[in-house]
Length: 77
Image: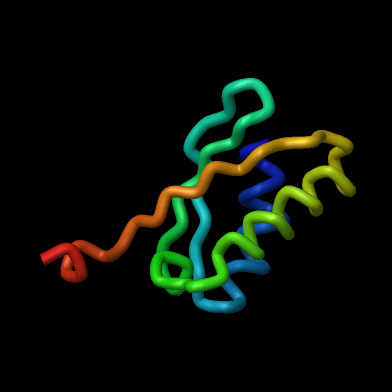
């Protein structure tokens, strides 16, 4: 799963100024960290749904993606 996210999903998300990092997988729940433009995106839920769909199509696995938004340190002040 980590390899798929890094090699397939990540370049597509980076194309829009975002960043996705695999954190962990527990059963069918995959936790990822979103940064860059993704950290402030208002339609991140659509991207998560798209990523889940792509994983199901390409890998045949039905997963639930749990996204954590990580804003740059200067936005937390």
